[in-house]
Length: 508
Image 1: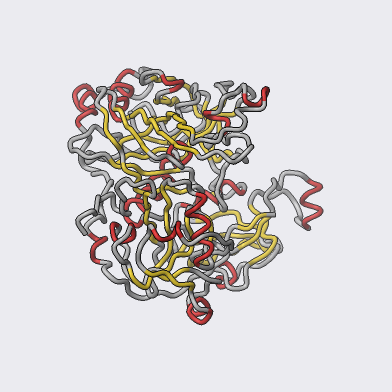
Image 2 (image 1 turned 135 degrees about the vertical axis):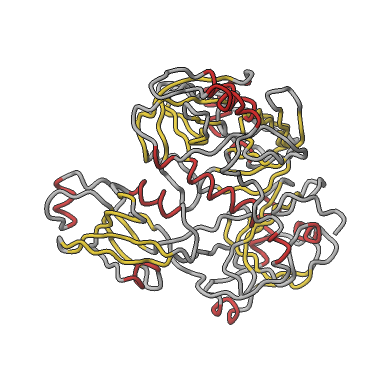
């Protein structure tokens, strides 16, 4: 069993300085009436007519918008311990597993890794994987025309494994969005990226599965629903583009299934409809506005007859079995009960848990979504208003780490926490002149997580800051009276601090 989510924050009102964010309402979005200049070949000769298997126009249109990302990490090694590779199997040295890895390193080690990214707007917004840039101290982006830029981190989300970067400039080539809900098995696709530190590379294949659950996703509430393709994807392709024969972005390449760490027949991409919603939230708020249904469910398949008997399900049925509902969750308020089987949500068929998590992830708190379910063999449909979700954790550590932030921080009192339906948090009572003042954060902001670690009190925040080893820390939280979650990336290594809208705010 696993928990989809528990409603925690249900009522909020207004926010200090909210108008500042409205200027960025359309940042990173695309026009539906015009194509980027790099799609000229499609306009000129109507390439890729139905039935024509020719990838040249799609490749020519999309490759200028796929970028090479190189990151630098200065990792502090634990005393007498083994070096931890922050990129895991994707970028690690395979010989470390056989020979025990580097030992007894007592000085900071500079680690470098690379991946891919996709320009999604002409003003320089780039989407990539979270695991490509997570913990990075410096991010360099090189375009297909060999021009290089230093990128700023705008926001990241471990649950979707997505991150947004920004480079300064204008009139960049970018990829036009497609629609991942319309994909069909056997459809031709291209994977574009920079595998194995090679120059931009295009491989072709088909969509071999949809809504695939890999079990490899990270985050506390991972969105485990991928497009599966046999287009060759290797280390370094992470964050690159999966495009259709019209050159439209249909997914962001993220994972490979391989016993060796290199291509072995299957790769996985995050569907573009999830990408669009996630990066729009990251650009506008610095945090993903994710809705929660508020149920527990059986995570396995209902195809097995023994499983159905054990759960008390009669006959063959596709869907997600509800094993429990949260007492204050959206599902319970709408009338969904334990033992119901969800078969459809927002007009889309729900054949399993990967379908459910994908549909829920495409919505934000406050969205009213129709949900169809079976109860005692009878089909019912209700409208569910999705809710927010926040949580808790704890720890202690020294004062010096938090001093870089400046300002005044205080642990949230129990009454205020109870009033906002959370277990705790840290309130910013004054911004001061430190790193907090370089963001668009306003006084009164309540921090509930730092680098996706839940925060109950000031001591929790101190520990996260110390363990960050001087890298970027993203503080997430809310303003009392506002129903949005905001994120503020803060650089602790002495570099510029980037606010949640991609601005360098040294002059504020």
